[in-house]
Image (cartoon, rainbow, N blue to C red; front, side, top):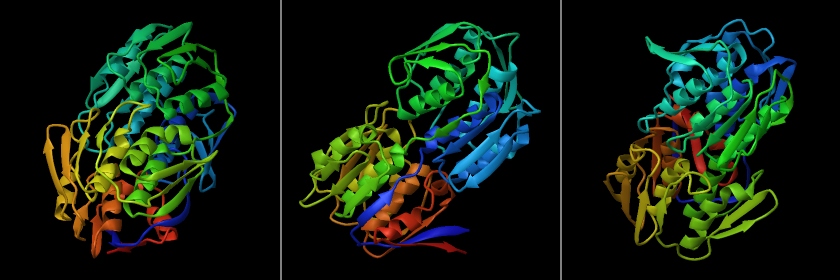
Length: 419
């Protein structure tokens, strides 16, 4: 068992380089299976457990996956021999559902076991199924697996009932090799949606409108290998921005796209922090007392749901009353009980957390209940008096590569302990 041990109270200072986006990589790697000729060389891939998991799934399907360095993968999918993704790795990670769209698009059939992931609430795939069926596929669920088949796929007009990142990407992937034109409306506009569309276009797809309300996909006959670089991770960058403010530090976050961070920067500025944008960097520092704010998560360009948990750790030590309304997932406040162990004063009513800022937190033994909750506990440990131990850090490793090394380089006292 591994845990993180943090001695809090140190102000973060220096510069930190952000990795490639997890939420992009977990869709781009399955999409690489659609290249029927040539190799996909993908760089700026984060060195995280979810990526390692996807590498194993790709190999199980018959792909050749070479790791050129820690952040570059070469994927050859020309000899894929199976359309069944039914391994333990598939079952344990949510993003494995992108194999449904990719296999359906290339082979017109797929069998993929229903995936897992972080326990943050019900995450149905009904909008995925709606899209696949509109493209001409039949969809059944048997013995815990999604089975999709089609004689051929054809373009369609699809209006999603809710804004959903997963279904937007998955149906866009499936439509790439369909006959005719597919129009997707009420789509998600997150940066990783645009990134996946750009990757598909690099392979020869014809996708327009990603990042807007309507995506148009003109089907092509085949896709080929390409060279591609994953965009920087908006969520990792936001986590370090919040950590800088929480510790009243001065941190420059590099290898970012500042526009992707505007909603996070706006809240930090509203609280009293200073945020300076560069071409590919943001600097966050604090020179005066911070104040509480109200936060409501929303689809991009709104405040990201993946950042609200780290933000709750910051607001727990800011004087005054703050509210965090979670509009995306119904169970994303499980980390609140862990923050309470450290002295936070927080009450949850439905999807809203009501936070009364405390002067300080105290170190304690806590659990990373999910990926972003783990990041919240790291931030809480950085500002707490005394020592904080964070258990079940395998959740953190799913999305934050070498998190202890990055914080140590900024002056934090944080170590990984193997028991």
